[in-house]
Length: 351
Ligand code: NAD
Ligand code: TYD
Image (tube, rainbow, N blue to C red; front, side, top):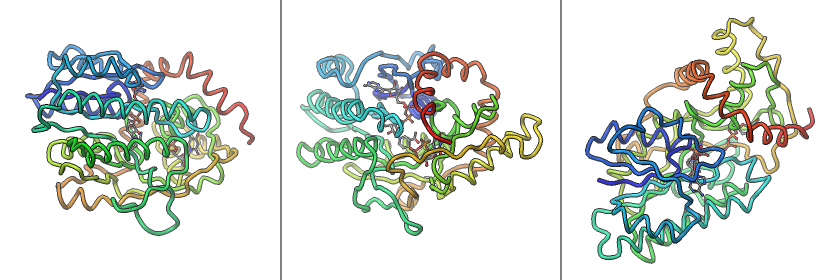
């Protein structure tokens, strides 16, 4: 089977590529990525020599390029992860999110439809989405696959729009699609602009830990390796036209998570209790900040038998160990353009 993975040089995509090459000796992977600030081929240095893997630098916003790629390559399936993925950046520049996440997805749908027009038999277009499309929960309840869409950030609005297009191509043209909506991921190779790697990096460098608002927002965290496993199960056994929610039943307020992270980091770095905690700095809240995300993944568990493999405490410790053991990776991605971004994002936030 020849699978096109888009966004394979990013955080989740690199885990998906690695997982599929290892778990499926019969599959060939083409990784299509435009290598934005978030895409990093170093994330896949361990598989670059694998004869079943090839990388192509290309942009999903380039429709003619995609049509040609599909014509030449005869893909059996697509796992579509390429996206602009950071909420704060979407507040700073919404249009970029529409272009990549909405237009890019429609370009891919068109290319797949054209290439597979003689028969959709044995083909699959798998769109990776987020729980953020469902909006924000109050104190109770969980997002199910039936929860109405209610996105609040430009990022989640662009992902919601792309999800609608994917469903529309199934309903209108019969394209064999499947969609999953996952909660917040954490783990190795995540770009240090998202909460966990940003805070690990700042604790190492004894920089302030910028907590938005009161730190009371709740996220449902899943280890990225478990997400890759869920993507495998859904790609191979999910029902065409269906949506699956993926989550770890693992809700944390931001401040409780940060305190746990500080405790782990104090131990690992040989610091006194309270030393990393002293870096916590409350800053202006994110505009439109969703209060709570929490996923009901019982459909995926019941129908396809997927369950997360490790506890959050264990996964977080493994993640900290990985970042501490990969200073070079961290230094490389935090230099240059990322540094300008950091100054722009946090330079103006009031303490
Ligand atoms: P990421 O930002 O780490 O990676 C995105 C990748 O897409 C990068 O390699 C980037 O170079 C590539 N890309 C961006 N624009 C492109 C374009 N125009 N053409 C080709 N490639 C392009 O993101 P991630 O965290 O790995 O997320 C991957 C997918 O999973 C996204 O669709 C995201 O919405 C979804 N998702 C993420 C999370 C999470 O917690 N990170 C949770 C649920 C769903
Ligand atoms: P993030 O990792 O950006 O993921 P998302 O916004 O997609 O959930 O943020 C996770 C939570 O952490 C979110 O409630 C915002 C908060 N946060 C901070 O308090 N400070 C920060 O510097 C960042 C990046 C996030």
